[in-house]
Amino acid sequence: MQLVQYSWTRPRSLAELYMQDDPAVKPLFEFRFGSEEERARRAAWLSESAQPRADRQGVIEALAGFNRRVGNSEKALANVNRLADSDALVVVGGQQAGLFTGPLLVLYKAVTIIREAREAELALGQPVVPIFWIAGEDHDYEEANHTYVLTREQQIEKIKLNPRESSRTSISRLAIDAGEWEQAIGQLAEGMMATEFTPGLLEQLREIGNRSATLVEFFGRIMAWLFGEDGLVLLDSDDALLRECEAPMFRRLIERNEALNSALIRGRDKVEAIGLAPQHEVQAGQANLFVHAGEERLLLLRDGDHFQDRREILSLTRDQLLKWADEEPVRLSNNVMTRPLMQEFLFP
Image 1 (tube, rainbow, N blue to C red):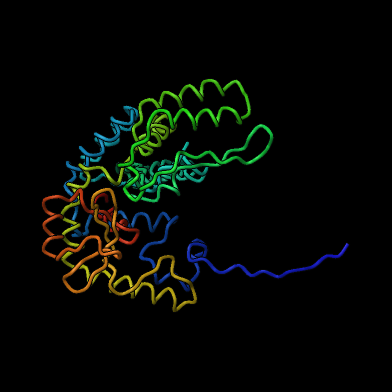
Image 2 (image 1 turned 90 degrees about the vertical axis):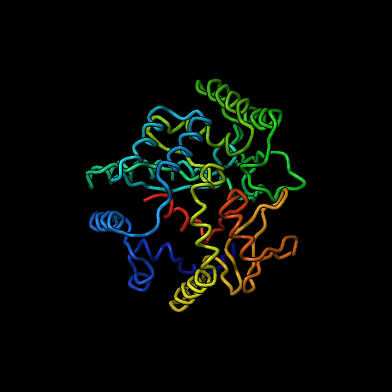
């Protein structure tokens, strides 16, 4: 037998260096996750900050509406109402909606959000609400419409919903009919290992499928079933009522679009200066916003006061875009770079 030895050096990751408290990446972050002292400092900053905030009552109403729609528990709805307390803080994490929740890491995220909120509430002595941000405004249906399962033959099998000819609309807006849920659940039933829990699990999934019009609803109902009694609050980022609350921040992102992109470019340069690859492509002329036009979600580019998508399907002036922000915010959508800013606007 001939053995050949290979050496492989794994590229350094920004996340890995952050978790290791590497001095090189410390200047890139304002707060250190996992430190009780830093958590208290963050909470104090939030209570003293003059940063603009969304109308809290509007956010509560939007969250209550979605959580009722997906059948979340009374404990979760009580947590929504706790946000009315001016001292209430939140722990937020999230993921795309995925078939049968998607990868296992989604469930680990939910558990982590719940646990971190509990620990923070005990440490800080003020309400801390766990929130799971479902990225319903994302339009990458092919990334969200499947999952992988281990069959009784110990094989990995892919289960996938039917493809869509035009799937560039937000996943929250993409209808899935009852037959597709049944087909996916039937494929799951054929391959999964039989235990005393299997019949109840399949029955629950079929009931959830029968009541779900979209993948986001299907995902939300499963997450409510699994974590509702732990008080996990669910959010659909494409929720129309939430969009109304987001309108002032959309206006700000449009008015200060050049400054926003310049800040992102400076951040990219800082990451590259310490020898790391940026986690997202950042270039001049990016607006970092999507708009909904017909059945599509289009990413905007900016040239002065002019905004258009890459394929030139839609062309807007800054004033037209600002009018949408004020009057029709449901037509606007964040990209990966502006979503954290919107999250900070909605939640302390």
